[in-house]
Length: 373
Image 1: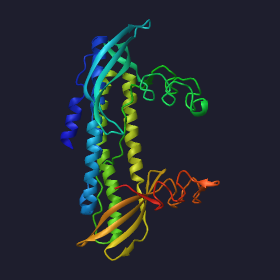
Image 2 (image 1 turned 180 degrees about the vertical axis):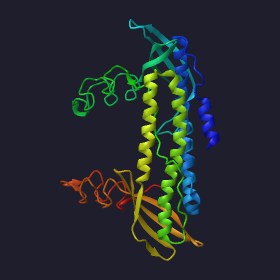
Image 3 (image 1 turned 45 degrees about the vertical axis):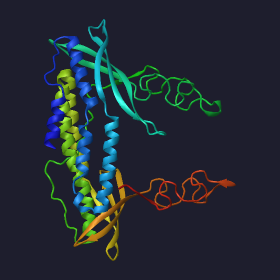
C-alpha cells in the first residue's frame, strides 16, 4: 500500500506557481488533470477486498479472481488516455478577478453493448476557473465544470432535447423545456473548490481481529469481523490519499477556504471513526448439515445502515470456510414473490410483465437472496 500512496501523492502538483493568473490557471488545471487520471482510490478498495481471502473456499477464491479480472479489464478499458489541457479563453472581470476556460481533451475506450467491439473515442470537457489575487499570489475563488448530467451539452439527457416522451407527453425531467434540469441549460455546474471527496472511517488504533474458524458460528463471526477489517484497511488507505489531495489543494485556495477544508477533513475523520465504533453484527444459530452450514448475519454500520447476509460454509480440514455470500433481496424483501403482482403472476387478466406470469421475483428468481460473490 505504501508504494501506491507514494505514487499517487507524487502525481499531484508540487509547489504550484501562482505568481500570475495564467500560471495559476495552468497549475490548477494540472492538479485537476491528476485527479481525472487517478486510479488510486479504486486500487485502495481493491487491495482491501483481498484481505482475508484465505478464509474462503478455493471455489469462492476462484470466483473472486474471475470477477476481479473482469473488473480490471473494465477499469482498464474505461481509463483516461493521453489527456491534454489547453487554456481556451481568458476574461478579465470588473471586480479584479480573472476567468479562464480550460479545455481537457482525452481518449477513452468504449465497448459496444451489442457487438462487443472495442473502439477508441475522443472526449473533451471544459472547466472554468475564477481566480482572485491574494497578496502576491492568485488563488481559486470558484470554478465550474461541464455538467455531469448532460455532459456539457445543455440539453435534457432523457428526451435528448425534444421536450417530449412517449405518446407526445412532456418529458418528466425537463417538463418540456428541452434544457438539462441539472444545469438549466447552462452546460456547466458550479463546484465548491474546497471539495476533495473526503472519505475516512478508520479508527486511530488497529483493533484485534477475530480468527477462530473452528465452528460455523465462530467462522461467521470472523467473517463479520473481516468485513469490518476490510473497511478499516480501506479507510486507512483512503484517508492517506485524501490527506495528500488536501495538501495539494490548499495552495490554490484562499486562507479562509483552506481553514474550512481542514475543519471539514477533521470532522469527516471524527464522524467516520464514530460510525466505525457503531459497527455491530448479530448472527442466527447456524443450520449445520454434515460438512455444510448456513448462517444469517445482520450487520449494523452506523446508526442508519443495516445489511443482512446469508453465508454458506464448508468444512475444509479443521476449519469452516465461507463458500458463498448472498444479500437479502431488496426487490421482494426476501419473500421470493414478485413485488409488482404480489406473487399472483397476473396484472388484471394478463400475465404480469415483471415476472412473466411466474409469480417469482425476477431479481432473486424466487430465492429471496441474491449472491454477491
